[in-house]
Structures are given as structure tokens and as C-alpha cells.
Image (tube, rainbow, N blue to C red; front, side, top):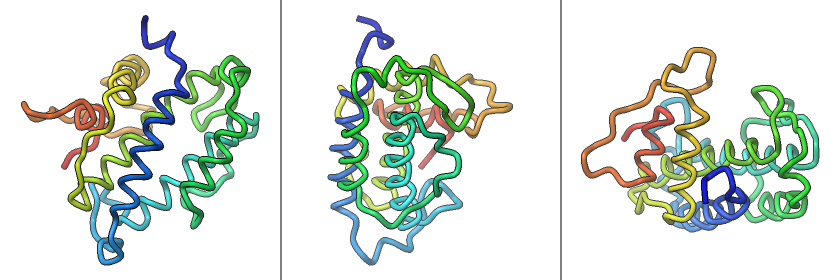
Length: 182
């Protein structure tokens, strides 16, 4: 089975589970700390993660996510409930509006699997937590990211890819491909 045949809702659910565990491990005194995203501290990145789940929920409903906030003060659990309510099998094949234009729902959701895994990795790195997501979530996401995110990034909202360390696991390699580094 190829990654394009995998239902992206399964890896997204695994990424949400991992994100919930990482966010539960963030201590109050870490919220002002730096992250691999230089423009966001831990608190800002956590609030951005929650916002991305609301954005993919809006996309699944057929709404334009671009006017939605970059960060929200809600909980990951509430955002996940909204996501699960709208992402039916029909949403996977519907043409949707995404921040970069129009795409099939399946492609849009793969983009947000990448977003959730990479930013959860950022939070894990910043807070000294284990940095590897479950393989079932990250391995297909890495394959799809390599197909959808070109190495040449002009016109794409990604920093240039980072050369992974020799011992980098798949989540770190995904973050590196997406332009993030420790």
C-alpha cells in the first residue's frame, strides 16, 4: 500500500494522541521558553498547535481557514472533538480551500498531519520530552512530505530542509525536511 492510499485520518489521530501526551508534559515554568520556531515561545507554539486543529476542522467542513487565528486559547481536546466531528470519509475526496489554494481533502489533511507532527516535535524538543512520534503516524507523513514539499522552497511557507543528524529518527527527519532543527 502506498502513502496516497493510506487514510490520513489514521496518522492524524496518532499525531493528535502524541500531541496530547507532549502537551500534558509541558510545565508552567516552560511556557516562556524558546522553541525551534524562533518566532514562538512554548506557550505560543502550544496555542498555534490548537489553532491548526481548528483550521483542519474548518477545512473539513468546507470553510476557508485563512481568516482563522494563528493561535487560540482553547484546548487540544476541544479542537480534536471538532476535527473528529467533520472529517468523514466524504471529506477526504471533496475539493477544499487550504491556505495555499485548493486541494482534495485527503491532501489537505496530509498537510496538517505534517504540521501537527512537526510542531509537536518542536514543543517536545523545547521542553525536554521524548521527540519521536509513533511510527505509524510519522513514517507515512515523512513519505508524503517528501512528495508534497519540494526541496526548493521558493513560494512555499517552509524554511530550507535541514540535513538530519546521523542518528535522527523519523520525526526529527520530518521536522528537518520541513526546515526545523534543534
